[in-house]
Image (tube, rainbow, N blue to C red):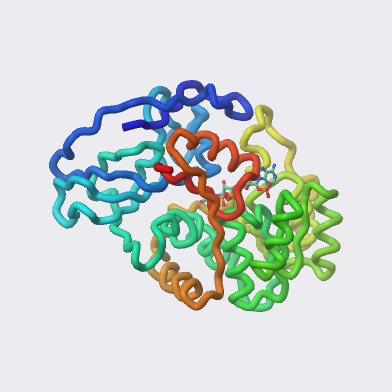
Length: 332
Ligand code: NDP
């Protein structure tokens, strides 16, 4: 079985030399464990943080050990009650072909209800992040004007559509290519969108939201956050979900220069960690499942095929190669 190891800690942008695809033996599962043939695994921006040797909300990857992360696959041997050969499961041991998983860390999923990859995206971690970050953390309410950055990505594309479905007065998104901007407006029903590479975010946001915004969902940080603070209306709220613009920086970056506006406008900026919100899981799956079944909510996936291309998929994610959720399909 092949698995991806981190072999050096990246300084700045990771390079292929920081990783190695290595062979590992496949063994029969011990008591309470299942052996899973992985079909898809997730690559996510937070994994960049786990490549640094720093204390955070999640421990760093260990050098010369397999990396981990969300995956879905088929049970091919079981030594655990409640799991049978042929079952499909969601679990946390991605980045490898075969996973020896403690059954208590596996969740059965139904491929008849949704394609398996959806459990890594729209019905999984990134979908729940969007749902919890918008409704719980930003306290979104009908009539709010919403701006989301990273809008063509896994989380952002769901935030914008969820806001529209719940009666936003205006939904604005930013993304890194003209093609993605077109996708947001023409396929996902955003009211306005812009390419942040085409000019200052502050000016483009002003133009897209002349009456200001009530909610900002931040996936990017940097000049996006500064622009949003300028455009937020009185009592506006921002969910700080990610700051991908700085994950590969080697020096601390300067913060927004307009923080004093938070006072006069009584803004609320609040971080979100999806791990706090699994209590919403049932409600989330029910509501989002309903929207999907009715064709009201769309979700795009970008598949990279072959475990040997897993690292390329991750590096591509950081560069913006993906539209929607980036997924690695283990076999071609
Ligand atoms: P995405 O699917 O959005 O993929 C990442 C995207 O980031 C790329 O496609 C790229 O799109 C964009 N990007 C890369 N560099 C920059 C940059 N310098 N400036 C602006 N955009 C950039 O990933 P996810 O949906 O999985 O994650 C989105 C954000 O949410 C990330 O910041 C992530 O860390 C965060 N997150 C946080 C969670 C939490 O619990 N707090 C949980 C899950 C995700 P483009 O072409 O538009 O540049």
